[in-house]
Length: 182
Image (cartoon, helix red, strand yellow):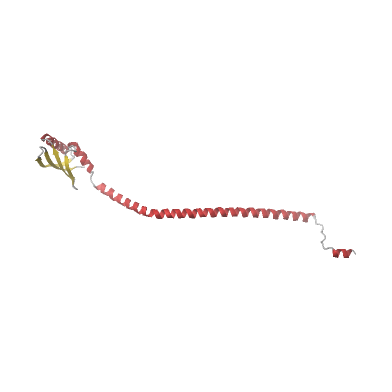
């Protein structure tokens, strides 16, 4: 009957395991558990890195679009800046060639008061034509003496008294020309 009982039993009989097999199974179970933990942790780390890189990429795309927009808006300003630079270079050339007319006015103020000057012109050959109104003959003499002193000091060359007229109001109108020395 022993064989009949064996045939009816549906639960398999557990075989006894050797201690080495049990240790191997336990080691495999621990190894599979740690492999699963490492897989999950690395999956979370890779997912986090992907999420960070995606956010960073979107920020860079947004920054690129903003900078492209700024550059396109600045294109007109850059053209104006280049134009201003060219014009500045031309003005610097002109100012380098042009004589310092301010020195002429400084010299004029040294022998004529600004209230007496009625007209001034300077041409390209540095010839200064000056119209002066003097109240008395003493002022006329003072102006001509100072002009002669400017000539001996080599500040002017070839002074000429172009005109001297007695005005209706009792004053004198003087026309003087000279070549300014810069």
